[in-house]
Image (cartoon, rainbow, N blue to C red; front, side):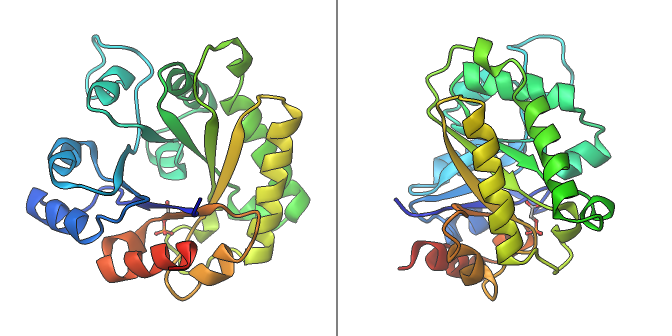
Length: 245
Ligand code: PGA
């Protein structure tokens, strides 16, 4: 199986027409597109190859939760993936480890594959790789708390390692460092004995000029692509590099 390449559009583009055009231009079998929720239905009608992913999800079923899109609504729309705990949500929306844990558990319980984002801020990285590992281990432990109590048919979990200092800065992590953290994430989850296949993606300033250095790393199973996913040619190149076509 090829490596996973996920387009994280964040709060882009500004109009539905642009969203449909961008989706059609990047409608690649095997790719996963994560648009703002407001475009999901229309993109579902327009995509024939790529899968869709939500950028967030509320943990309750339905009810009085103004502004939230619940797992049930995603399920009913046939959305199979959800990004959980992106650092931008942790920062701008004050999303806590407890909220992230509730979302992860709801995703597992309802067979929506979570793409859990973890990654250290710059001040932690400056203290060295062991500090970064400690930070990430703590994020993983909190996100997966009580997972063993959940019934789930999911066999795969996806972790996106996104060092905060590398997101949108044009300064990606080195492939060696990203690979070391990916291995660390896989080992941490294996010792927890969840019996899940763990795929680790790298995210943070991935573009077509650096994609091959990440795709060549055995322990990196793909990429979560932000800015470059809004440029169809760039995104297609990145996809091809990860899938060696
Ligand atoms: P970037 O964003 O590729 O623009 O750095 C990645 C992400 O935040 O998922």
